[in-house]
Amino acid sequence: MGNGNGATLIIPPQGPLKGRVAPPGSKSITNRALLLAGLAMGTSRLTGALKSDDTRYMAQALRDMGVDVDEPDDTTFVVHGTGRLNAPAQPLFLGNAGTATRFLTAAVAAAVDGTVVVDGDAHMRKRPIAPLVAALKTLGVDITAATGCPPVTVNGQGGYAGGRVEIDGGLSSQYVSALLMMGALGRAPTDVVLTGADIGAKGYVDLTTAAMAAFGAQVSHPRDTVWTVAATGYRAADFPVEPDASAATYLWAAEALTGGAIDLGTPATAFTQPDARAYDFIRLFPHLPAVIDGSQMQDAIPTLAVLAAFNATPVRFTGIANLRVKECDRVAALATELSRIRPGLGLEEGDDLLVASDPGLVGQSLPTRIETYADHRIAMSFALAGLKIHGITILDPACVAKTYPGYWQALDSLGVELVDAA
Ligand SMILES: O=C(O)C1=C[C@@H](OP(=O)(O)O)[C@@H](O)[C@H](O)C1
Ligand SMILES: C=C(OP(=O)(O)O)C(=O)O
Image 1 (cartoon, rainbow, N blue to C red):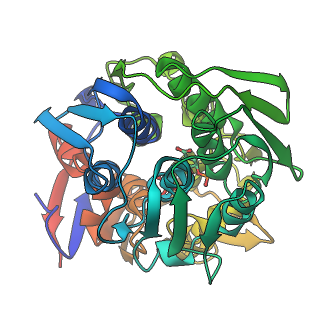
Image 2: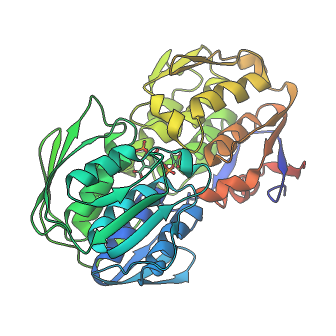
């Protein structure tokens, strides 16, 4: 099986993909629950959790700040919170985990008495955090990010007063989630007020407030643009993590592309994560609509864009400007890599992506080496093209470890042949 180093060639399966594959635990929910458990007093048990690069960075950061985190099995974290975080001896290194980076930046400002440097890899050092830094300053936090991206230096004072904080969530809803989770640590309630036109996928903020409630916080949402967080702190909880909806999109798409039957063990309607709404489109394949607004299911857009390549008619993706500040510029990456398969297949138009769609691609031999830009979603989505076209090779296949380390094994278990092609 070609999931090791350099490159993986996908051999298109002869027939429909059938079988049972459960996606791993949700990255978004695991990283919220880990943080909230780390901020709580007492022992929390997270089951069904994701173990991947992104959640390991979060768990390690908590350990670096004095929280014991045990891992009794492949899907469980046991977190022994003490109600505080210690200043770490070294910068917190968070790879390219946006959730860990944004959530911890706000949390350490309130939970640590001392200096914390929040840092990541070269990709994370290009992902903006300035709006969150500016918002934290208005709450009296001593914080700097010279480039507007990590590294961020926070001089925590072991708490903060509470009050009112404004945030523009247009570049990332994670800023809003970060302030909300911090909000329960104030000495008085915190009002988080949204400015700017739009917040990206609001469903992620709903995930945040749901996780906060499970750990004892009280959040009210009196208006679309305002949340009020009571100054309760957090209490430990046993917390089951639902499967990852973004990971599920690859399996739903593999089923649709091959006319198969893949049992994920969880019906699409049972997910609370925003990307589950992609299922409503995937099930229409090969009759995806002419325009798909991606604003509320951003991480599913690479999946839908590759699926759209095989659609009966062209598809325009709108509302996806903030895909440009994810693990890579995904609008550019999708256009470039689709067009590497067949010139003109993917086109950037402003911040939209237009997929020319060509059902005639099925069964063709188009030897193509797909650049993945260290982006797990580019690797996982373009593997889907390899189910229908001969010669699709995914470079740096190991980058899927960010959120779905078992992805290649999952395809293998469905009978997809993967060949080392470094
Ligand atoms: O809050 C979350 O868990 C996430 C929010 C989204 O990011 P943005 O809010 O930066 O768009 C999403 O792309 C990311 O994978 C996970
Ligand atoms: C954008 C993503 O991740 P994050 O922002 O959490 O790094 C993603 O998983 O697609």
